[in-house]
Image 1: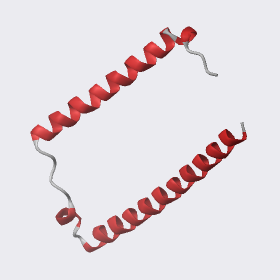
Image 2 (image 1 turned 90 degrees about the vertical axis):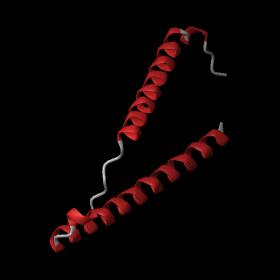
Image 3 (image 1 turned 135 degrees about the vertical axis):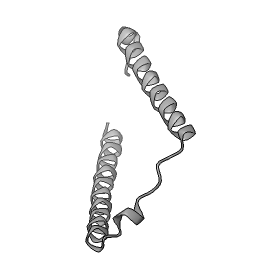
Image 4 (image 1 turned 120 degrees about the vertical axis):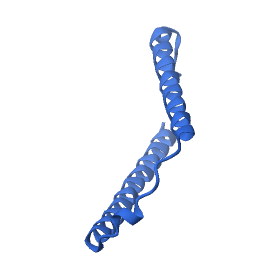
Length: 86
């Protein structure tokens, strides 16, 4: 049981570091955005929207992943009486 606790503690630390890194990156992007707004160059830095083909691909991939997740969730609930954790 102590190995599991160590693994969970390490995962917790890694997740906390990832959150801190994401906050730092977010702050950096926000400062850059404010600088571009102040200089009036925000319109030049805006990316072009993706093409129609990619938007359709993203749509199909997203809803397929969502459907797979719902399927796994429903099967997990339906067959939960057969699942044993040892």
